[in-house]
Length: 256
Image (cartoon, rainbow, N blue to C red; front, side):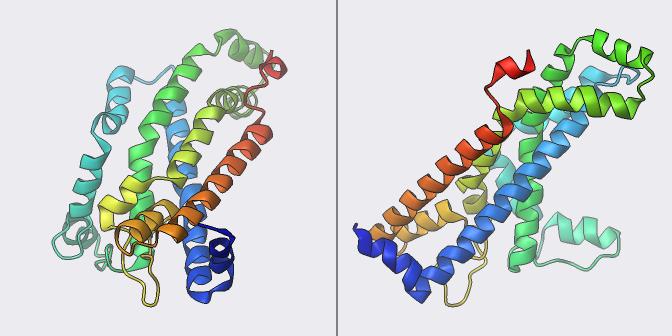
């Protein structure tokens, strides 16, 4: 592997177009899937934490159950559910609402949509559990003082709950973004990075890490794969450093 491989990725049309297409989807996938799973996890934790809600232990157990099932099992089950021909999504759920079947495994748009929904299901329980722990650690005195000052429920949520929760789970959110950026399992197990794209050696839903796998295992393009791996590492490290700096995650003195 030499400098020539780096040059080829950005100058040869076959590599340049594929690389930037895969990189674009990798970034979109990371942002949408991670943001959605974190948003769902945080919002559900806040809703379940309400004092007047009954059966909290049971509800929390139900929401955490998807986390207890091995991820690869869940992915394979979803792959069957989203099957274009016999999947329950098309044949039962969509048909019940009078919606036409979707090409979940053969249309890149619908495959990407299915992947994002699946990752939301797989990822929100962890964020839900972590957020629940943070919420239970917030002193009631803060809410009582805010209520005495005339703060509404929305004001308490915006000025007390969300800042403390987001600050506390910021490192966890960062790791979720990094994990999904390299989330090989869901891409590979669901549809092997497909559907196929004409004129490209990457599938329609391949992210960088799954494309690297194909380059090494299917086409023996070891030099290009190693080059992309280096670029991937630089991107991930840079993104992580930027997020740590932007969120000030480990500057505890500022929250004292």
